[in-house]
Image (cartoon, rainbow, N blue to C red):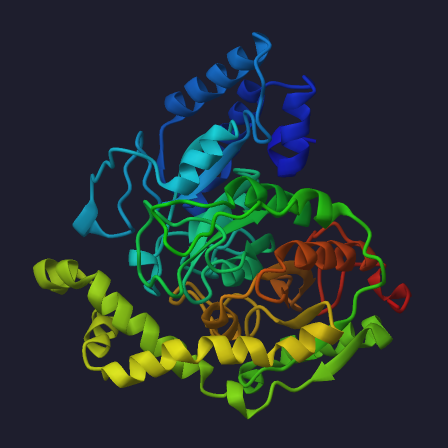
Length: 461
């Protein structure tokens, strides 16, 4: 197996145990980039010499017997909305072309402290919104990789980097993970600090991570979680042991609440068929659960918050270069300027009651089971519909996308699991159980709207 095909946890262990060096791993990833990125275009900035210098420094550090971090020598992609003190950060907009920050974002600093090699900056859609960037889906370049964390998901899926970070204000981690066939994890709002990253909405912005297994995203999240005095939504509490809990056996087989959500009518036939099979395979471990009418307005409330906050946070860019923004972004900012203050306040105040309304579900079930997207990745003229992510982003609850299924054309279909707010480690453990029970290591099936081969041989009880 090529080193670039290793899962992140395997790569970290291999370097730590001396089976190969960071130089060898980074070199193999750069070779892979040279082979495939001319078609996929996952990278907004890449300096090969700088990446190799980081790898050489990591190897030198280890050779001198110094302590190594959990990501020592492992190359990672960074979505181009996170500041990097040694690389440009341009937000996917020519208004910020050539912008070079003075220091790292908090998330980038924590990755470096854990020993990671910052391989380069991955493509984001314009201002992490909807307008498609140059990235293509590695499974079929005529299709979108999703957005806005387009390059991060594509880089991991195409074996150019074993892991990457992104962000989600609506569906920008879960959706591209589903479209590209990788694992995407969006932790509870406020667990990972956002200081030094582009701010669209303080209420809705989340930092998320991409990997090729549940263990990968658990490790990345564990490194990133923690208090940051520059992010008022983080708290000075102990970091959950994500990696250990995710790999542990649940005390009882998990139970899943299959939730259509108020937007089930937007699920495509391939998704409906695939989930019907999944529910049949889960058997007694799954039950259909209705959310109730209280959740029907959540999508609209999310939209109000997002557009008002964007109108405020992007006001200077709109005023100095509005004619250079995409039509869709400009229209969202203009709508944000028209919303009433009372509607904005009502949207904010609706988050806590709806989270409380979910408590009875999580008292009985380990996770909510729902699609990650309406269907497989559409064409490159769009980044796809985030509608199956919107509710969970609005509520700030943890969510993970698992590539357990595929369409009839072989494009990945994501299974989204959602957990109780703050119960991220339990959600990761449940996700790990589902992957193991379904008989796949999160590899995309070859064909058909089905689980991976072998998953249908037994009911999961």
